[in-house]
Image 1 (tube, helix red, strand yellow):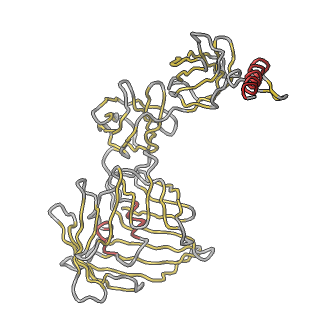
Image 2 (cartoon, rainbow, N blue to C red):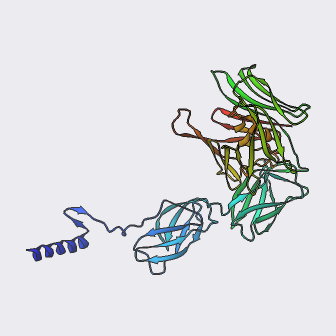
Image 3 (cartoon, rainbow, N blue to C red):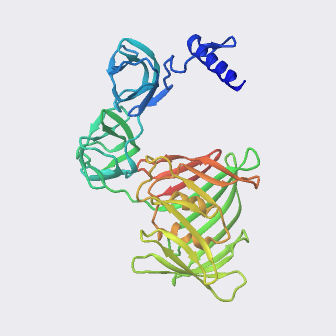
Length: 432
């Protein structure tokens, strides 16, 4: 009986292969029809599944304008082949052909940016050499500046050990340009706003404002205002805005005496732990210690400021505990207290002399320990992230989980960020 059953199964299998059906159901060979992927990025590989290719297939793709492009076949098997799409092939819809046979259409997507670890400054002076860091630049590549009228200005470009070096022409007009990389016949955006100017413009931070919706239609504004007159004064305030009307609700004011000691002169919020503070700075002006008189104490508590090898602040600690710690990736501040920051757009860059937008935002998120932010507000701590954050991740207002907020920016003529926005909230940075 067992031998008879095996014989019947074998006969049924042969009949299926010959007729392509069994029990009235059509069963097709999966290779009898050509299978193409829906899309491929320029510079990528395409796997075609089909058993009808000749031994030496000639594959081409034909654009919508009728232009034919020969492809390079890298692998041929009994079940199909693989061909490579040139990185220079323009995005679009193409018909794939084997000889004169049309196999189907495929969408060619733009090629990925070939450069990783990209770092581009926010601008340069006329006639200045500019270094652009990154891995993936190739001999013969060229950086090009494009103005608002789409006029192109190719730059003298040289490969360096860390990327490329370009020269800004002496006679190039001042203003904001887009910078592109031209390589292998393709073009990629390196910077969405590259400033060309005659001289370096250094501005001083004078105020930071945070606007958020209040009781409709009113807005609430939290502000840090910095006065460098004699005496130096730092004021944090809360103001309700209703149309053209503004109502100051509360403020704290810190005044610095001749010895460098800050005193809480006006305690309107009654929230600060810091009644007074002084700072110890090294020969380079970098804060190494803050002595803070905390509410209820009779003596000041020393807080040590610790930096990494690149000069970024990593920790603020008292003898008993770490009060604040900071995390960085690729020269960007990614973790500040309970808020994380993402940096996905290399073209988002602030003026090199501008204050770090993350520190400005965080200075308005807490009023309990303002001594942390005085060195930032006064320009003593000038280390800033290499890029501007593209998003921030904050605790959800519901108290459960987190929320991701995409960030957008406005810049002044010199490339300083003047506004950072998300949803209906925004921070304004004032300079003079």
